[in-house]
Image 1 (cartoon, one colour):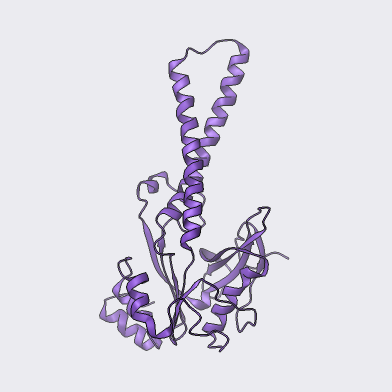
Image 2: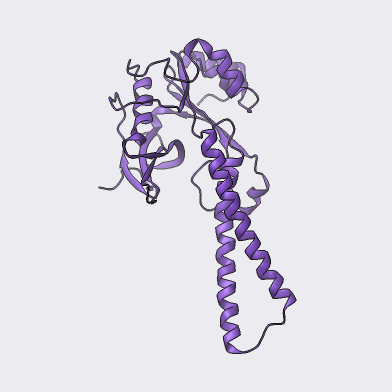
Length: 278
């Protein structure tokens, strides 16, 4: 049966249910959790290094081919026979394909090159808010203005309502059948998606459901989500913020909002910092 969220995302496997979940596991993605909020990493350092190296080799190879093609076009006198014309057309099509491939691959390179400290995603269960601070290229867009490639450090920093986020699992069509958990951002009280957030990338089989289960248990205040499951223990909030949050461009009001214990306290924080309250 198709996903209820429209438009559907490519590679859809299934929609995920919210609420308490016994299929849970923070694994090495959980950075920190206390009674107010938790923070999950979405890119491990080893993954970043691997994909960065892979994409760099591919992009370099494509760019080298394109450069070689133009070198021969401008330095060699083309023949005028029909066979040569066919070869030229084939080479031109291959060149266009390479340009398109670069258009798709450069954002992937930026994605790994400019992902800061794993791009943590923050869930506050007292206010029902979710916060992201990530590279602009850390998303699922295909069509981009090529001018944006000139701004590799471009970021998006947003606050979402947990009630407007819905979980979806997609697969990557590889021989290893790796799955990814996506948060679909929907218009309030609808299934119309307006944005996508990566929650848990590239897991095998049932592993792709574990982080989703842990987050749901945390947001429901279910004891299955242990506050000491992360890399930093609950009393190490200062160390967590110094190592992961500080110097990454998080707005001051948002860092304060991580620990807000109610909608009223969140409203006071936004008012103090002159932030429009949604």
